[in-house]
Image 1: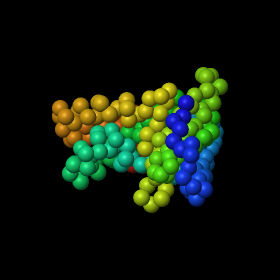
Image 2: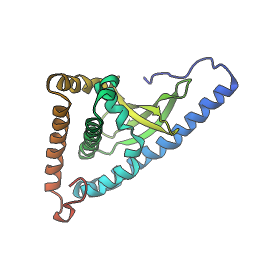
Image 3: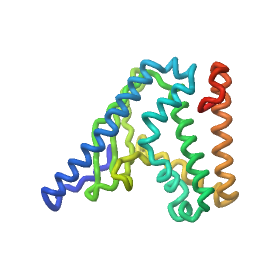
Image 4: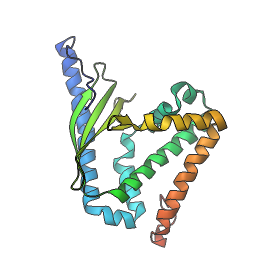
Length: 220
């Protein structure tokens, strides 16, 4: 069940109006996103499997701008450690995590089986800084499933996803121990190299099956 972030008793009608406005803003950003994902995957999966660059373009155009990878990376390794990294290491790690999330999207494309995604609820906290977007995934082959996106209000006033929860478990909760262990035992460079290697191996394999004309086009 989705975490309830809204307060049962708001301090004033003005705060209630502000909260409703923020929830409407969240709806306007994420409802079209999941409608687009459903439409694209249901009608163009075969095309995207044959043309990775076309799927990459769809992700770049519609998905990546709504995910705050920097905040996700910070949560994965811990805020203090993240802020303590050298600027070059921090940028390299965020880029590696960003490409990892893209890899997950490609892996999801391969496993897609006709699911439909619909935003069914939005919850924003009283200070309008954090919230959840609950997404219903309806599948023709498995029981329906709820996915919860943890969202954050960015400095420019937009809302972006920073984590995802399935069956009560978030991505950050699952991966943070591995990320932090690698840093503690081998250093941040080892974590960056590990992520880059996994991503490179994956995209090399899928691009090997794609037409040669795609060479040089992301992700190939």
